[in-house]
Image (cartoon, rainbow over all chains, first blue to last red; front, side, top):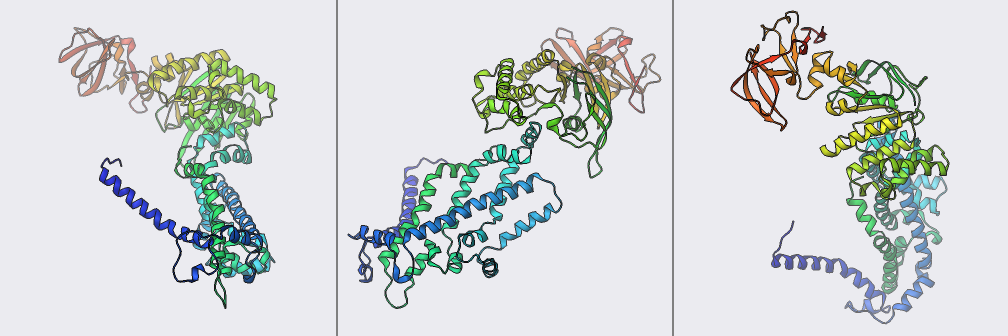
Length: 282
Length: 335
C-alpha cells in the first residue's frame, strides 16, 4: 500500500516510535541497573540514567560470578548456553532436513505413518512431556551433561515441516535431471538440496538458536551441578534469594550479557534470515 | 550412437489407468523421431519410460542391443532436455554442464574439453560463469542442450523443450536443434504437441492418441496419407476438412466411406464445383485467406489466395486424387 499523506506518515512514525520505546524501556532499565551500586534500586525510586559502576559490575560477574547464589562465573554459564543453543540449532536442522528428505523423496512402507508421528510431536512441547523426558534422560545417565541439555530438545516437527515445504517447491524436473546426471540420493541431497535450502537453513538457525538459548525450564530441571548451569536458568537462581535482597545490579548485568549472543546472531544473519523467510522461487 | 527399439511397450498406473499401450517403434541409429499428439496422449510418459524416469509395466525398451527396463537413467547412456530447462539454479553454467560428467568420474581435462566444445557449438561461451537466473529463456534452453551434449550420449531425449519460449525464438531454436542433430548424428526422440514443430523436425513422426500409436511415418507421408481421421485432423494447419459422407452425398466414388477428408489448400474456387459453401467468417493471413463456412450443415474451411474474390456463397472444386476417405466405424483410412 502506498499512501502519500504527510499526516498519515507522521501518525505511522508516532505509533512506531511509541512501540519501540515500550519495547526498549525494560532493556534500558536493565542496563541502567547494571551500572549502579547494590542499593540504588532498593531506595524506592528507580534511577533512569547509568551510574558509575559499569566496569566493576560486569568484570565481577565475568570473573567470579555471584557465589552466594551458587552460580559459577557468567563466562562459564554463557559457554554452556552457547553449547546447548548450538547443539539444538544444528541438531534440529540436521535431523529435520534428513527426515524431510526421507518423507519427500522416498517411497517406503508406512511413510504416511511416519509423517503423522512427526506431526503428532507438535502437540508435545517440552513442558508437556517434561516429566517423562526427565525420567528417560535420568535413566540414560545424562543428567548434568551437554547431551542431556540438548538431545531431548533436538527433534522438531516444525523444522521438518519447513524443510518439507522447501523441498516440495523444488521442481521434479530438477530431481530427474540430477538422476540422469548420475547423482545418487545422498549426492543429490548434498549437491542440490543443501545449497538450495541454504537461506532456509540460516533463517531456521536464527530462530532455533534463540529457542535453545532461551530454554529455561529444562536446564533448570536437569542441571544440579553448577558446572552445567546455563545462563538463563542461572539468572533465575541469582534472583532467587531466600533471606536477603536480590543483587539487582549484578543480576541485570548478567541479563544484559545473556542478551548479547542472540542479538549478535540476529544481526549477523539478518540478510540471510530475511531472504530465507521471503524467498519462494527456487 | 544407438538404435532404440520399443517392443510392445505399455504403462499401467497402480490405480489401473492405462497411459500407454501396444507401442512398437524401431528407431534407427541417428534418426530424429518426434512423438506428437494432444495433451494427455501419453507421449511424455513414453519418453520418460525410455529415459527410465517412469517404470515400465509391459514390454521392453532396448537401446542398442541392451534391454534397459531395469537400468537406472544415469546408466542408459541418454541425455534429456526438459521443458522448464531444469538447470541447477545454484551452479554456474559451467558447473551445470560439468555436473553429470563429474559424477561419472570423467577426468578434469576431458570435462574441460567437452564443456568448451559444447559452449562453442551452442555459443554460450560468454555465459559460462553466470548463474542460470542471469540468463534469458533462450540462453537457458541452450545451456540445457549443452548439458545434454557434453554427456555425448547415445540418445537425446527432448521433452517439449521449446514450449516455454516465445514464438519467434521457438522457430529459431527449432532450426538450431535440427542442425545440431544433423551434425552430431545422435539418435533423438522429441516430444511435442505442436504439429508444426513435429513436421519440421522429424525424420519420422509418431502420432499418438489416447496412449496408442495412430501412425508412424515421414512428415510428408503422414501429411499426404493420414491413417485415420484423428491424424488427418491433427496434422496440417489449417486442419483437414472432415465431412460426413452422407451430408455431402453427391461426390462420386465415395459411397463406401463414412468420412470424406479434404485439405483446405486442396480446395479451389470453381464455377462448376460440387461443393457449395456458405461463408461465415474470413481470416486474413497475409499470403493466404482462410474462409470458414458450412456446406450441408458441415463445417468447412478453404485456403484461398489473398486476392481471391469472396461472396456469401462459394462453389468449390477439388481434384479427386486429393480426397481422403475414412471408414465410418473405425475412422481408419480406406484406399
